[in-house]
Image (cartoon, rainbow, N blue to C red; front, side, top):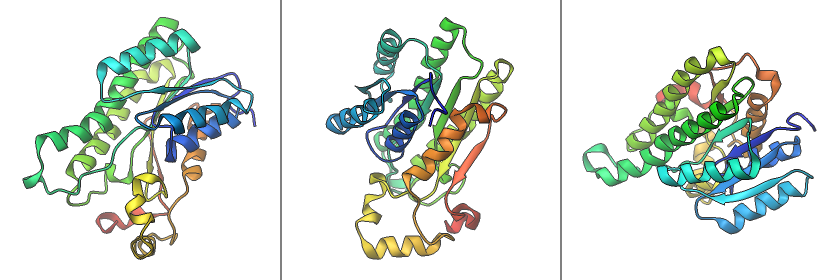
Length: 259
């Protein structure tokens, strides 16, 4: 239970779903955890409190990752409170719009791209500025939670699909830039995970049954199953793993466009 003992992690979008599962697992494994939330203050504070009960340090911060100024201020506050940290998990994101490109407004396009793609860029850049300040690149980790839609596309979600494929290539480029300093950058691409972002499917038994019938595992994934992969990528066990995407989808993406 001490895989991450002595380390500190920042997990964006950690008040629910996959981010929450990652934050809690990291706390169980001995890490101090910075939790961010966008609007769910009560839930964000509850996650931080649950982690503190494990005997490690944790604090919740409100953060809109799409706001460059907020991200800069957030990292300044984390630096003042926690100092150097070793793990950044870019999990905060929003779902697609289910609107064809011909009908999609620029505002709707931008809302998804700013959160899902600009957000990880803003956070990673500020994190790297801290790494430069402390001169502690080696052994540090950036983990992006993307989606199988980084390469499996569905109509009506061009903004979401583009943001996730952008995250993939952003991470791969960053992995090359940081390889000589032995700092790793990897993606986790979940399929259908039973989290609030999929509530429209989860709350409708017929839709859920239809969706799960397509998945070769015949069930949706659990947030904890994604968190387990994040733990590996955050740990010393993944010291030579970088520029990769780990798919967690019960073999759904093997079906290709039909997924």
